[in-house]
Length: 134
Image 1 (cartoon, rainbow, N blue to C red):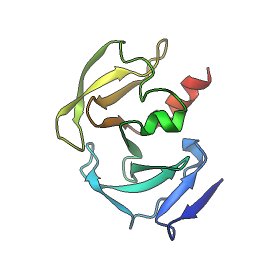
Image 2 (tube, helix red, strand yellow; image 1 turned 180 degrees about the horizontal axis):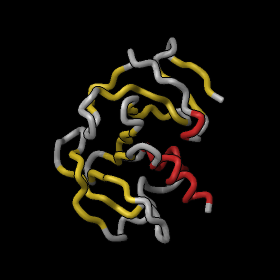
Image 3 (cartoon, one colour; image 1 turned 60 degrees about the vertical axis):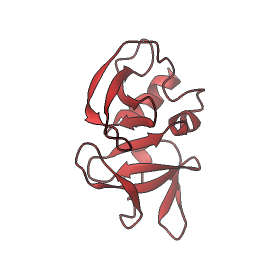
């Protein structure tokens, strides 16, 4: 189920990546997707505005936004787990992000800039939500 907000420019959705509506491509973020370099569109999930690439189906969450959407205390539940250099730059500062294991016992790797936020590639939001349900 979804509903439009801000004259259809930002969309509020129930947290399920499978239920995402078509994003109004006229609501552009100032940031660009680190995968394809296209401008992000804006999307509202559980009242939190996030950047969404309608081409790659990826998401950028500013610091604290993913935690708010997943009802966790932090964006990545356990940042003490292993990490390595990611292939994508942060859309805010341009520094190469780190790939982190999202949750212990889960093979989901997400890109994180320690200063600015978390980048989730296509399908990773749903995988993160599913991991938290287990």
